[in-house]
Structure formats: structure tokens, C-alpha cells
Image (cartoon, rainbow, N blue to C red; front, top):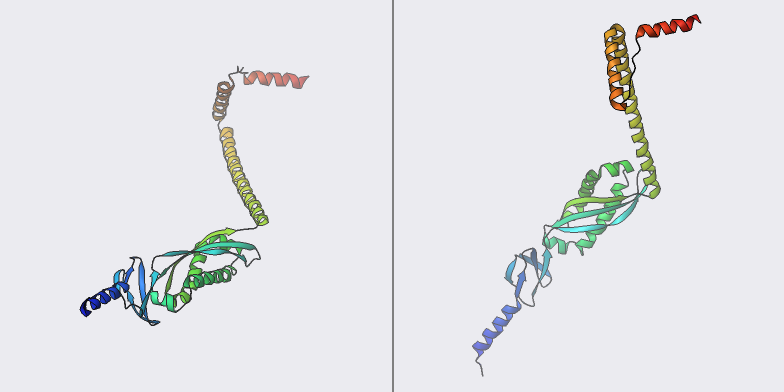
Length: 249
């Protein structure tokens, strides 16, 4: 029969094997002894007291929380549906276990509540144009309560703002009207500038007959080049004689 020392060594080795715990690099181990928190263990091979102690592993990586789309009423009474994503990370593993029963569920419900409260205070134009600013406001509102849970909110991103179909059509008509107004203003400005240039050109031609003649020659050249047509030039004196004959009749 094996002696007492051999049995003791075997039992000790078995107890040590039962107490071995391996914590991954991205985890933090929280050790409880008889239900009471005693210490944290680092990634790698660790030894605890079997039966008396147990380990809760906490993932310390950055996590994403997809907030369920929330239907809210904006300040100007427009119903919209908001879809957001929250990025968070645990910085205090014992708090995330001791201070809250389920930190993931609690953070999700809190994010939904803050999202509805804060977004409902803004009108539709503010929601559409300042999504980044609103995300920072939601982040600030979430950070206070979650600090007590050992959670750090890194970022809140507003992914999508879904509008009713009738509102989309109204906004499309408004955008079309704005573009049409801008086009008419540009056209009117061009016509105003062109009229001023024509006036200046007319004054120049009246002051210099040679300038008028050069302009006529240039116009005839352009007509002949574009249409490949024959142009018959009639002297001005001949045209004057014809006009006098018509007047005498």
C-alpha cells in the first residue's frame, strides 16, 4: 500500500490542478472568496483556492451596442425613427459585476432612454444637420451613470434618421424649389450683366463708325463660316437711293 506521504503529494497536486485558472489576454479575472470580492488576477496562468474561491472573467475589449431603433417626436412635431450605435469599454471589472446585475442590458436600456429624451428636444433640421453634436450630448448623458458601473462610453454614433414618406416628399419639393430659385437668380444676374455689356458696346459703336463696320464684317464672317452661304454686300449709298425712291412714290 502506498505510504501517507505519497497520498498527501497526490492530493496536493490534485488540489493545485483544481485551482488553476487561465485568463485570456483580453480578459480580467475577478476572484471571489465565499462570495466576497478579494482580488483581481491578470491574464495568464493563475492559482486560486479550490472550493473556497471562484473566478468571474470580464471581457475588457471595446464593445458595440446596437441601440434598438427609437420612434420619437421632434420639437416641431415630426415623427422620426432614430438608429444609433454605442461604443463602450469596461475600465473597472469588479464594479461591472458588483454594482449592476447585467451591465450590458442596463447600458442598452439607459441608452434608449437618453436617446429619446435628448433627441425629442431638437427640431428636425437640427437632427439632420448636427448628428455629431447630438451624439456627443448623448455620450455626456450616458457617461455619468455608467461610471458607477465601471463602464466608459467611448462614442455614440447616430447611424440613421428615418423620416415618414410624406415628409420625404415635402423635403424633396422644398429642395427643388430652392434649386429653381437659385437658377432663376443666376439667370437674372447673367441677363443684367449682359444688358450692361450690350449698352457699353452700343455706346462704343455710336461713338466710332469704324467700330460698327468692323463688327458688321465680323458678323458676316461668322455667318459665312457656320452656314457656308453666299453674302451679297450692298453699298450704303445704294440703299439710301432706294429708300428715297420709295419715299417719293
